[in-house]
Image (cartoon, rainbow, N blue to C red; front, top):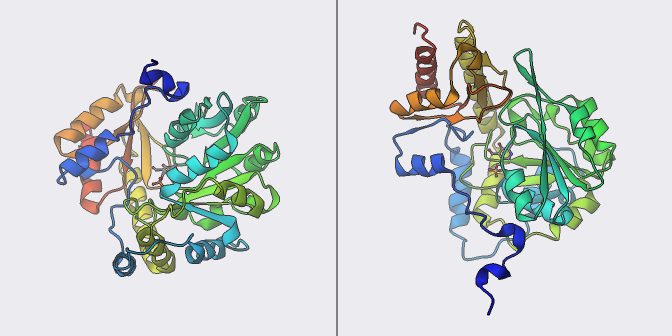
Length: 368
Ligand SMILES: Cc1ncc(COP(=O)(O)O)c(C=O)c1O
């Protein structure tokens, strides 16, 4: 008799459950300051809560396939209709749906690093080989490297994914480079998880009309402030969305997130307030460190900021540890470009942001 291990698909053996240690920790101890996961510090608006409560009372019923909210999303983005939109439990699930429709074991996914971890998580599960193209660190800035991406393409490349703005770097790639990559015809996913902070005018959604290989992913977890509700979506040409929709679990999005999302899209004032708050605080934090020698603060168009204290002889891990002593959870970034000085903060409440500023200044030996 064969052992159970021998029945597993070879490339899934030993894959652990995804556990985000810092999120687990934050739920165990609600007094901690959650400045690590690019969440929104502002709770949902009354309008959104009302919609969720209304539909919670109908939770004995199955949802439909989200026709109303998908139509609303299409309208906001200047697309023809719900046939251009697929919805999921956060954009993480949407990545799963998309990847399933393209990737065979051994085929390649190009990602631009440093980047968000979900592409690798879902790719590895399908037996994909992840090809990481590093951004270029020059003049205290992490530059996109579209040439590097093009050079990494092989006949096994099945997906290229670029986040815009990128997490954790916070910057945008130029439209002309998106066009060059789109022209290859390879499935090209543009992750716009944070696009609302800079405005939809920065979106590459128009490319989906010309290039059927281009897909845009979005989420309500960031500017809309609904990470715990779980709602994300992808935009694309009708034929491609139709094909990818074949991988959807029936009723994958419940009625509470579905109608909560619709209320959030309708609450344009609530979104505008959250964006203004965030962008003002990003400016406040960025401006607070201008006098710190050797600290690189990367300009951010999102709700987090990446720092490199390497030139000041500092390690990101030590900053994270110092913050921990005050109950603040930050994110350390692994060593890269010869520096161990990387750390990232997510915008918190006003008090939290001021506490963060004073901790960083203390860490770099500056007056507060
Ligand atoms: C670039 C990027 N894409 C996607 C996501 C996933 O968001 P969700 O699954 O909550 O929609 C995140 C979350 O941090 C992210 O940073």
